[in-house]
Length: 267
Ligand SMILES: [Zn+2]
Image (cartoon, rainbow, N blue to C red; front, side, top):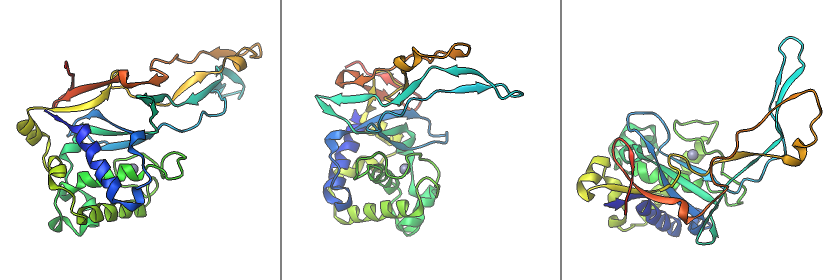
């Protein structure tokens, strides 16, 4: 079977090596994993998740009486934190998720992105997938302060990306292709999900053990502040953490993706 996330990672290494604007990226600090998403549903093809965002200042939620405006209830004090991911001792700074099988079905000729490549007639349709891979790498911030612009993907949005973001990605993708990368490295991107299954007998991908969950920002109660609450206001407790605060290689699991689900792979 083909390990799809491994193949994407190999492409990323080649893209970073051949693209000066992305050469600062240390892919040892980037982990590619898969999420499940149907082909016939709207949604992102891929997302870049930053794991270096700092802890927030303490805060709380509150509820007010609509008539009197008086505070009626409050949540506990909390800070928002990012879980840590460490693989073989290396701290991962970015996760890049690909949505399978949806990503495999992406085509330039069905997308507004065709305009960035000189129109649908002039480009190979699978290049849409390469464009998405470059797009997610481009979200990695050279100043290491988070996500370059914003990470919400899906539809074209001037507010979240700006037209120059898409133009830069298309220019880097075209230049990468012009550098004559090994066609064998990119061959799997030419195939849609059905073709991959036929050719390889199945599609595998790295996931987190707590699939469909993955490392995400979470709220942690501030016990010292909560110990000094004034009397008379009802305090709502926060939901306690249900995901690990630290993920390691033991929290990764390779799963087989089918058109309908992600199955646990018994090695
Ligand atoms: Zn984006």
